[in-house]
Length: 193
Image (cartoon, rainbow, N blue to C red; front, top):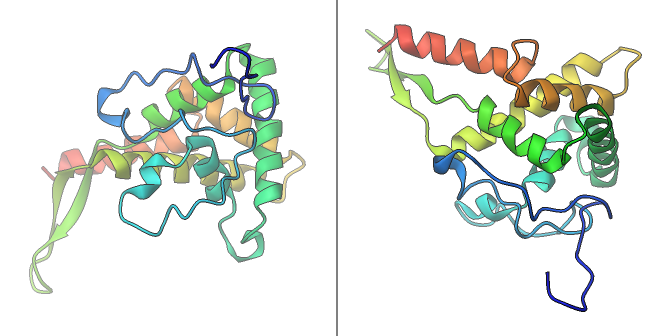
């Protein structure tokens, strides 16, 4: 940081200085440099194509927790969930939770997918490579969906489930919903090459 000016920490605790993205293809699309004290920039990230790649990755996680009609717009609630989840991640792994999240996102994005080729008559699936931004988008979506599904109508809070999902995904463990879905996607794509 700049001498004399206190460093901005996410949620007043977590620094982004030592966070590294080891996947070269995703470095431009996982943004941690412009992280603020809370994951709420009020930026117009959807106004232009590819602009959301510059949105802080923690904020994108909070945004994807706001999916489904009854959670729309509850960003303060989403921020609190992410904050609690980060506390739990730190307690369980003793690492910087932002780094754990970045590693999880690198692990969960499917690298190969299948698409439909041909019109109504003889439609078949063709394997295609996945663009880096789509890999990040899919990762964030799958992590949030896995946390929501595992906490729905259960005793455990969504923050606990989100923390567990991120930790398991960062270890590339098959007990993570996101990793299972990614493996299934790549397996189907492989059979359609």
